[in-house]
Amino acid sequence: MGTTCRALGDILLDRDPRRALSLFDLGIRRLTEAAGGGDSRKETAVLLAKSSYALRRLGRLPEAKTRIDDSLAILRASGAYPSREIELGGDVWVALSAMADYT
Image (cartoon, rainbow, N blue to C red; front, side, top):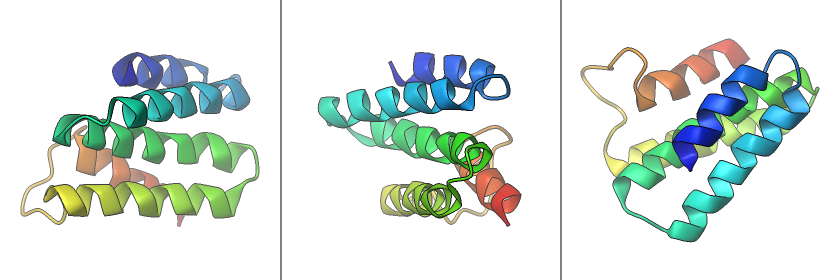
C-alpha cells in the first residue's frame, strides 16, 4: 500500500498537491495500522518526507518541516541514519533531499 501511494502521490504532486497529500497520508495511515517491522517504518519515513513537498506547495511550511523531522527520526531509530553511505534514491536519500529542498 505504501509503495502504491508513493507512486501515485509522486505522479499527482505537481498537478494536484492536495490529492497527492491525501495519497501520502493514506499510505502513512495504512502502514501505521499494519504496525509492521523495519521496512514499513522506513516506508512511512519516505512517505513523510515526500508529503513535505505537497505541504510546501500548499503553503503549510511548519507542517512540512515537522514531517521531515519525523522522517529522519524514524530513520535514526531504525539505524539507517546517519550512515557512511547513502544509496541514491534510497530511504535516507529521499529524507535528506526533502530536508535540503526545504532549506
